[in-house]
Length: 404
Image 1 (cartoon, helix red, strand yellow):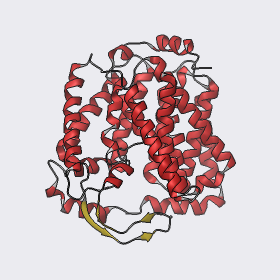
Image 2: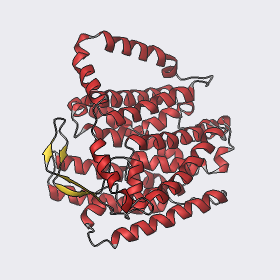
Image 3: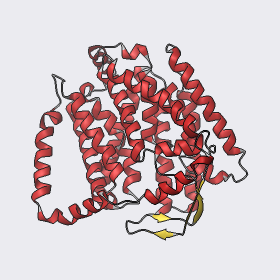
Image 4: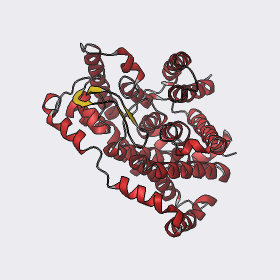
């Protein structure tokens, strides 16, 4: 039952994103998309609740601060639903509104190693699906509407997998590496700065985390050579000049100063306590289609600021940011510096990289990445896992044949 629940949990999150994508590109009708979305949300809710079986009661400090954070989140949800301008459709349809307050409960995800191993297996299967899509429909990787959604669902989890390559065979490590490289190249081509940093940081963290492994996987032995050859080819190849020009333009392009200026001019209204779950700020925009294909709808008040920390500020003020960091930052420190095994260190790094991502984008919401972040937070606060050695974990992983 646990195995089925984990499969359905990740599959439901995937379908929520993919159904919207298929509807947007007119592959399925609006009605079919809505039915798929509703069924996926129902599946997500039931399996998510079923898998929250670890109360993390052994860490009292965590329990106190997390319940403060959770209580404040409940207040923000109530304030959001009591707002006279509430739009129930956007509240549940947009992943960063209601669902961003639900995903942190994944800190109570079942911590038995069997469940973690099942999670790795589903992530690996998602990576295989991504490779199939890349082979069968490579054009998708060059489409700004399609590629980011596919990567966020099927590829991003492979960063977590690659960080833990010590526990797997060469095949799984190589597959995870290839998936991340393809995702990185796609984001570079699309000139998505924050996403490129996210995937690139996962690859680099995986390399350094596995650097001291005496039984280092083949892919990490070849890692410097691969990047040296790829970098040299990219630099010397004249056909890449247009891409390099596009990247340079995007690298220094200022797309958010005007938006942030308008946001901070209104910050006195929400600086300390925020505006609640459905908080908005005044920033009128006419409907338009950008050169890169991004469509902006006609709005007067926006409920998204395209920055994780500013989103927390808008909805819950400085108090929200402080409580959020009080949960995640100590967890990252414990995982990275106080753990005896690579698995918990990888969880700490996942959390730490997310905290950095939030400076560039890193929007909390209903996504595979954000789910992994909060599962990792729970692992970092679990003494039984932290105290295990790599040898013990390798034995347990082998017992469940995770490395095969």
